[in-house]
Amino acid sequence: MRILLLGGTWFLGRAVAENALARGWRVTTFNRGRSAPDLPGTEPVHGDRTSADDLKRLAGHGPWDLVVDTSASEMAPCQVLDGARVLAAEVERYVYVSTVNAYRGWPHEPLTEDSPVYAAPPDASREYGTGDGVTVHYAMQKAGCEAAVLSQCGDRATVLRPGVILGPGEYVGRLPWWLSRARRGGAILAPGEPGTHVQPVDVRDVAEFALTASPGAYNVAAPRDRDTMGDLLGVCVAVTGRRGRLAWAPNELLTAHGVREWTELPLWRTAKGTWAVDSRRAQAAGLVCRPLAQTVADTWEWLTSGGVAGGAKRGGVHGREPATGWCRGGPRGVATIG
Image (cartoon, rainbow, N blue to C red; front, side):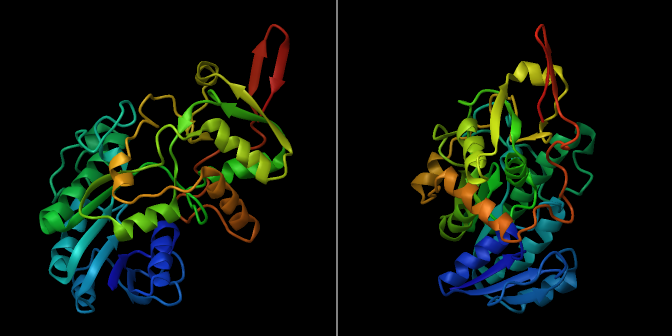
């Protein structure tokens, strides 16, 4: 089996490469050679996806049975279209990793694969949708990238729409921040209710599914009613030495104090559809989600073994500074929790 990874050097791309190599597959990676070292055992081709000459040179290394595209997160649909047009004749199947953000209803409504996505043409430029705000602009761009791949590969295309991906190698910093905060100990501000269900998916499980999923569109998330915020934060406390205690604060109190959702307290969001993503189609097609406790424990092991959270582009975005704290006032006084 020959596969091509667009990216392939960090987090999801690296997990896909590791999985494919473990299967004994021949793995070509295509990237600029700047973000991280190429994984030993892969056959790297360095180049720029926005360069027609580099794409043509890449195509000369084909054909492949499968291409997995994990590196288009900041690309315009027209750029993805250019690459898909060149590669369509060189691959049997094309897997494009999108996001649940492509749905018009996220994060406010429950989602299935039949929920409407944003409308964006496959040749849309980076400017398309800029007048609709940052969030909608990003969503339109991702929907346009999906359209670009589908326009060239049709029923040979697989579109994966993950929600939150966690696990060893995470560069966004969501779970690493919670683990670091738990390790510091003391009273830990825990957002919302401990029974709130969450659906993060392990990066290794996404990688496995990317290599095995049949054509079609799939929501990639953990089972909807399996894990809770209390489970997640409780394991963070446990694996880091039980130095802290969780102090739960209601959503209303946090929003009243101006705590920023999703970033200042990672993974916390009050919109009803945030963790209401139906992933049963993916599970029926072979997605297996390991226990959340294993994801947390393995991420802590990675961090304590020298792993560095936070990539060159997105590190430091998530979490509150330790010195900031948070004050809860009431008739019996003020407590500082951070």
